[in-house]
Image 1: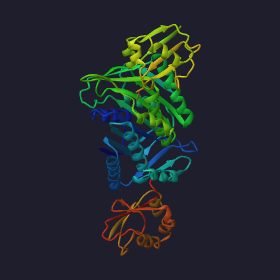
Image 2 (image 1 turned 30 degrees about the vertical axis):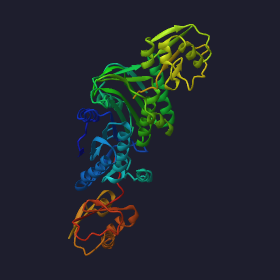
Image 3 (image 1 turned 180 degrees about the horizontal axis):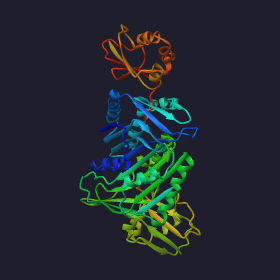
Image 4 (image 1 turned 90 degrees about the horizontal axis):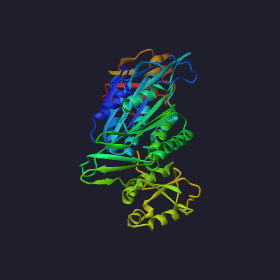
Length: 146
Length: 146
Length: 83
Length: 83
């Protein structure tokens, strides 16, 4: 299991390849990459991500541990950035490795649902005016399925 | 939409990066990579993948089109190999791009479920003896959820 | 005349990847019956039709009552194992 | 003495990322009541507690009745928006 919280950009493809080559005889790898997309006004200049340094890695590790307890996973990778990001920049990625695709997919979705609402990050969109991104009820509801 | 059926290996990370950089203001990218894993006896020497050339690309395109009709996707990539593969070789990958993670995940799982049972590929494991991989009832059942 | 294609263990049992067949069969099932009657290799390949799938002109058919009149190509194979 | 941390718009409304607070509060809710009574900035930050979440020693609490006795650090923030 590898958890990284960083301000620097990362190369999702290189991370995926490194994660994959570290496995042996795993059948399925799922990855998710989150990317800065425009705001609804279409005038996004930057996205600022604040986090709670003392808590972040601990919270993500607990979420990843839950995923490993729940599914038969060979490995889990989570990378999440903080700081100032721009349009089309990578925000974060998760990758899961498993013998079977069903476990790899379910665990990746579980990780994303929990990272969305239970990892201490807050996004602020800087466009025409600056605005904190509001949590979505649908993201909170998504946790109910697990 | 890009569909590729090929015998040559591919670089999943490079493909993921190229797919990602072709998008604009998409929030979510999901990828799945299928890799040759060992057989149950643990003596796999090679995996042979036979396909039906005149049908393969047509069948995959129809599956990808269904996914695009069903979810709000910005793009879909499918690469599937045939021929002789070895342990830990990449067999295939799918990638989906969407504004939201729910669509990207659902479409990637849909594509995998259909590619598994409705794309004309047949796998033969060469180990202590050679054996055609039997279709799993669970893979057929997986189609019921869509 | 119709092109008949075989894949995976169907191909191995019959010993051919494809052949041209002169047939009056109207459905996939009638073609199967004709082929199965040829010799032991064909009989073995078509012994358990529940283990077989077919495509007519590269389209998977739902069952063997599917018509083949006018078709150029019929393929027989086990359930697919892609992905 | 307890370290109190603020994030996102809670931090902006209060105007501080963190401070040390001398308190006898036994629960998160009691601490909120003390802080909210300080001045307008705190009152604004804590006006709608349903929009707030809290962590005690870096563990998210389920609700504001959570105890803080013995805790070293309490944090207040809006619902998280990671991913």
